[in-house]
Length: 258
Image (cartoon, rainbow, N blue to C red; front, side, top):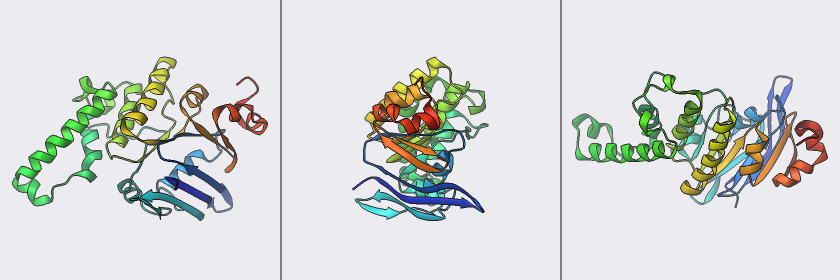
């Protein structure tokens, strides 16, 4: 049973079909890429998976507690609760909050105390707050953000803001992490560091990752399988070597020199 099964997913906006009969399967522990030219429908596809848009037709099945459940059309916060988190192509941090507070907010759904415990400061409140702080510190350490934990998010360099957005998504404890162009705007050194970090977090946290990215060096290095979207339609899927040699993919997107 696949962790994620997308079957004939379609999204239409009036007379425009942004995603058409797109299907995808992702197994537990995989690191899968989704590529395609600008305007191919990649972000729309992510928005369908994460509840920003409701599908026009088709199904999105996520394995929850050992059985597949339909999540297409659920609200984003409900999809996050069942184990799917994402980053955004355009960074969406709480810019006037600190690095630590950005992460702690993301952990809110996993808090195990109720309002009375917080109001009256019962022992459960302090135990949970200590646990969340330790988890936040572990995540900051992995992404080399510990020394910036009290810095406002808006004051971080661009690359560190990208890292913080990934940390915040991971703080929700997802089983499936969706990364929407995490290397966008990064220089080659930052991209190389991000490539290593993505592979590390997949292994350390036993995560399954779906990645949209235009940087082909990153995609080809870290992804085990790749899907290709063009004009809203999946035109190919396979291992990186297969995708690089697929004539239809080369014509649509990669170019002869890849």
